[in-house]
Image (cartoon, rainbow over all chains, first blue to last red; front, side):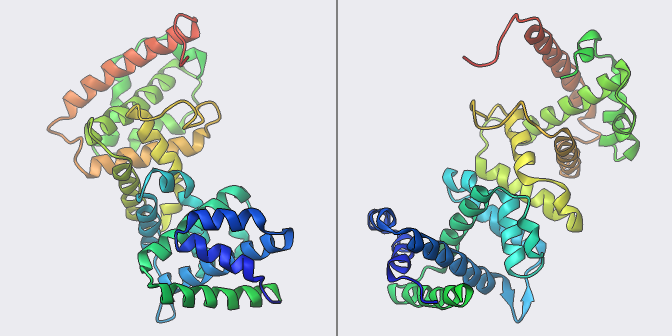
Length: 150
Length: 170
């Protein structure tokens, strides 16, 4: 299923730190576009986490995941609050297939969403993409989101 | 807070399990393996938890940052290897921040805490501080002296709260 252009642009603005533009777009998304935006976040997180934590087909150690989440939460007070360390670690470990999907079942949906979004921002910040690189990453996430939605 | 704990004073004998634990003897955890149905066991548990607070204060001092606390808990959990998941990182950070009076009203849910998670995190924090030699044989007596004093002081605070003589927050 094709992902709506507006949903893609909304995530692109967010990750490029164009916050005013992001907010404007977000407020104008239709219900189905919001679902596509969520799918884009899931897909972008999936791609970024796998790229960051799987090397030569091997998933990162628990210690590396703990370290990374601590690093991301140390960025500022907002990150320390919004990224729940337990949820953040579990999210990464699910994506790199060290935990089953149901490992997230007992977590609050808002906690999971906020942790995922803030960790995604951290991955992108760390990758220090050029404009072109970020566009490529967004396109990759779009392809993954379309696979997930089909 | 169990109201029974308000009924006794802290005595030197209540410091014994904490001393054992800080000497690396797992028997120091005995008070947590017994039913907390006697004043003595309750006092030992109280002293232990106050010892965690004092050790945390010694470790972090007055000029700590939130980042240092996050990093400390991450290192603690990494050192636990496959048992890292036993300690909930948010719970451990909250315990440290509470010991350092670094919580604002609403930051931490004080009324709905999970005693099991708090206990596991407290033991892990104190064990890590022991490994870091924050408390060692050289300063043990001073540590226990300060812990006893702090435990008595906090007990009096609890009594005053229970009697309605003081209240928390606005």
